[in-house]
Length: 384
Image (cartoon, one colour):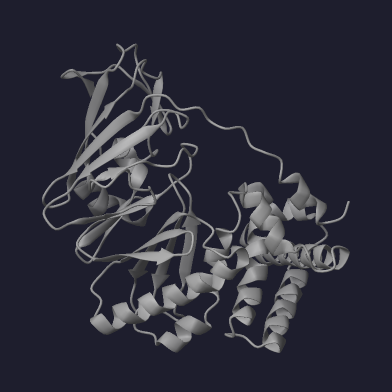
C-alpha cells in the first residue's frame, strides 16, 4: 500500500451529531478566584452520569440537587447520578484555592495575578454528545481564557465544541494581557499570563503572530476557526520554549511555557511554535498512532520555516536529515507500533519515522499528480 493511500482512507466522512436542547452550566468565580460555585441544569431527561477531572473530588464539595446532597457513586473521572426529574439542576462548589495550594501543575497554579487550571476540575458536564451552553461570571475586570467559542454577542457565554469527556483543556482566569487576533478563516485568542514588561509582551506577540502566519499558507487560512493560545512565562531556562503542547478539550488550544527574558531572535529561530501550530492541520489522532500526528508536525516544522524564509532550503533539508539520523539512532529491532509504547527512549524513532513517511507521502502525491496534489491538499481535504 502506498503511503499516500493512508490519507485517502482518512477522507471517509464522519457521522454528524444531532442536537436538541442545551444543558446549561453556570460557574461563578469569587473575588479572590479561590472558589468556583457551579450549577448544571439538564435539558429534558437527566443523564445517568456526569464527567469531571479525576482529581476534582479532592477539592470539591458534595453534589446537591434542590438543596439536598445526592447519593452518588464515583469512579475515576465520572459521577453516577441517582434518578433525577426532567430539567433537574445540580450544583457544587470547587475550592480552587486549595487546588492551587496543594495541586501544583497537575491541577492549578498561579501565574502573576491569574490562575491556570485544568478546566474539568470545576467544569463538570454530562456525556459529550449532550450540547452544552456555559455562562462564566467573573470579578470586576477579570478575564477568562478558554478554547471554547463564544456564544452570541453577550459577554460570558460560551459553547464548547462537543469533544470526548476525556479530552483535557486548561483555562486561565484573572488579570492578564489578552487579545483576539483576526486571521484568515477565524480568530486566535492570545493570552499572555504573568508579570511581563511591555517590551516582553510585544516580543511574545510578534513571535506568536509570525508562527501563526507560517501555518496559514498550507490551507490559505488558519486551520481552526477559533483557537486558544496561552503563553506562560517561567523565568530563566536553557532555551526559549522548554515546553509546549496542544489540547483539544472543548476546542483547540496551544500552550507555551517560555523563558520570557530571551531575545526575539531566539524565539524566531526556535522550531517549537511552528511544530505545535502544525498539529492543528490535523484532527486528533490517538496516542497509539502518534507517529502520524507527530510525524506531520515534525515534517512541517522545517518545511514551513523554509517556505517563509526563516530557514534556507539547504538548512531545512539539513535539519530534516539530522532528524532522520536521530530517529535511526533510536531505532531498535522492534516495530514502529512497539515504539509507541517505548517511553522517552523511543520518541525520536516515533517522531522522525512519522516525518519520513510524511516526506514520502508528499513526494508521491506531487509526482503522481504532476504537482496538482500534495500533503497540503490531502490535509485540507481531510479538514473539509
